[in-house]
Length: 103
Image 1 (tube, helix red, strand yellow):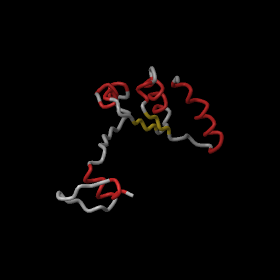
Image 2 (spheres, rainbow, N blue to C red):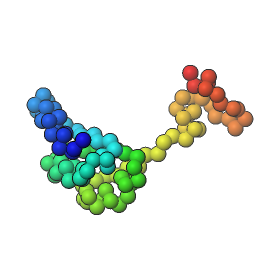
Image 3 (tube, helix red, strand yellow):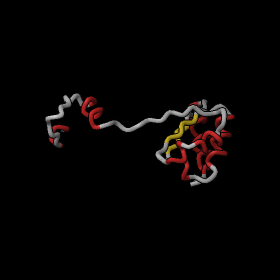
């Protein structure tokens, strides 16, 4: 995939809704020269959201490529205890949790 493959989708969205689409890009570091297109989109006032798990996205490299145009937020996965809280399962050090509890 090349980063310019996005162009027909952006144009189609604009034709349908007459506004610029928000653009979500996951694992974009796998596309060569992605930062050039993203910088151009940001300069054209598109809202671009980049997600990924690669360490390169967490480094200062992304800040260098998109200087002055980014807001970074690191999100960590839930801990086991947080997962239990989300599913409203009480946590206890004395309980062994099995899969049947998660149904």
